[in-house]
Image 1: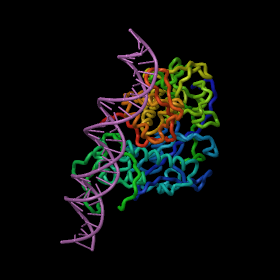
Image 2: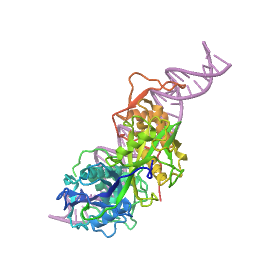
Image 3: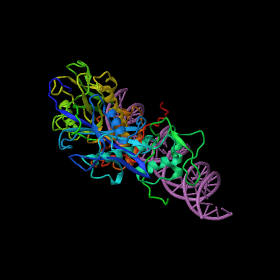
Length: 239
Length: 239
DNA sequence: CCTTTTATAGTCGCAGTGACTATTAAGGGG
DNA sequence: CCCCTTAATAGTCACTGCGACTATAAAAGG
């Protein structure tokens, strides 16, 4: 009803919390910071902080992302607003409303404890439990959201560098979903989806490893996948 | 970084805004209220209001929903958190962070202007333009979200009464998506999806109209649709 | 040279689906 | 009462997307 002029209103502290996700060594990792103060001193938590007076939540999230990762340029990175957590009592000291974001990084830098001396570290998703506040829930929501959006959007390319192989793209799906995918079928599906990826014309090659060199692709103009790349549980195959 | 103890923080006003959607006469309608005060006096806006000190955003949204619709019991209604709008300047008077929700109603009551004398009215979605604040955008986001979730969740039943015919369910899809669907195919698809709907055993009948009476169904236990009910394949190269 | 490894190409069969036709069960008008 | 209309329900058919699988190509290593 927006009767600002008639009703008194309670002021709230507004923060952003970030679930910064990346892939390291074939496993999903999340950036955590160690809390130096009460409450939850010594516990790990998602990076985050207060909104400044002239910032939107998105702006604040991107600022925190830059501070926490130490990356010079975070403008190209995918930021996804998850939802807002506003339960009374989620912070024992005061009433805090927090807007949660997921951020997807292709190449994880070694983090420095940003402005606030607290240590920052990449932690495998499965080991990231017992976080401060309601951050366990936020992190779980982030993974759910990202996993779901892989199905019907081009979000997977946000985990990849500018140029990538189809094998790397497939690893994104396999790692986030925790399932194995058939390589020829994945390839057929991705290439059949218009605008998902486009080949890098200057031919290919990559991966100093063994085997036949793979062709390079970059993200295409599409944002949504038609038809979607559906998750179908499949037993692990002998790799 | 949650350095509450080190940094000063700005207090914000936190509100909820509701896009209350329903189907009347085969068209999507939204509940709007007329503003009585500046800014935007005389303009239509989405219902909403401030969070009370001990309320979560969801609780506040449900309270506002009850006040604005005059419904005695809103506990069964579907509330969907959309996103949070926090751009500075979205309210010309003060810094307001607003958590937006979509609410889905099966049977639209005639609204009374809730607590705040302002008039409330059902407006066809297509006519709801030029709203106050950034409510045009919130309303568009609500429709996008609902339309998308119809594809892969059971959300459509939230627009239907406890018992409904497949024809009514199909009208939900057709109205929200703005496309016509083939009736036999829709029927086949819905019945083939386990847990989507279940027949009301006491046989059927409804709709005082002409034609063969339709069987009645109620919502099933499923929440997601496997496989999804995809919208008419729209090919695209956006941008 | 052969083996291993990884990328890429192609085949086969089934399930889901779009387009369409047919049948059933009501009401209304002559 | 008969017939027309209306709407729900049943069934057909061809195409396609996809899962499962096999085969070939191009590199590195021994």
